[in-house]
Image (cartoon, rainbow, N blue to C red):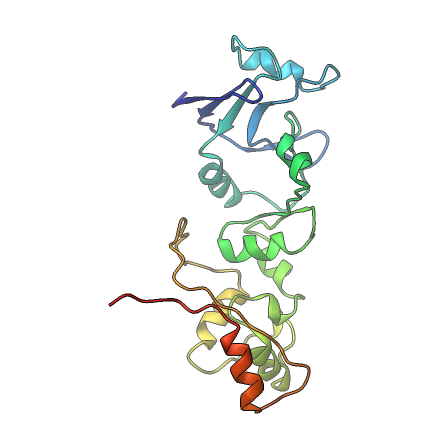
Length: 234
């Protein structure tokens, strides 16, 4: 246990723990994945109460949560060897804490060996699903998807690729240009960009789409004047 924090509103003790594995074989599905043990509800009918025997805490079931703080690193390591399959999330814990019901939140989860694939996977079963892309099958998973799923391909680039007869990720084999090699790398599910967290917000933008194209200065000036301007002190 690296630290203990108490959620006063629910009288729940939250502990940070380290795990050796996070993606395990399951008799219900191909894999099971539990990012934490315990919950903040303590329902009398909870089928996961038996897990407390493996986590002997002084708090009763429903008043503690053990968070696996190294889950991402362990999962990334296991995915390098895992085969594609169905994942049962929260097989022995409460998958959604009370905040989900309180705020009406949903979560779409993508599991993969890099952030390119994880982002594609998270978009695959919106608004409330889970997709797992293994290293062994990432190329076959990407092959039939439209080129627009790749990072960096916007509307203009998509049109150019379509004109060249490149409509799916599997078609991206003969690209030219400075971005061609990077797109081809993405097409094979390869992404060596570092993961950046807590990045400072550097800009704020606002846009408005007109019903018809216009070069009327009066209209354009009124739109610009309606936008807040950043004040600078000299």
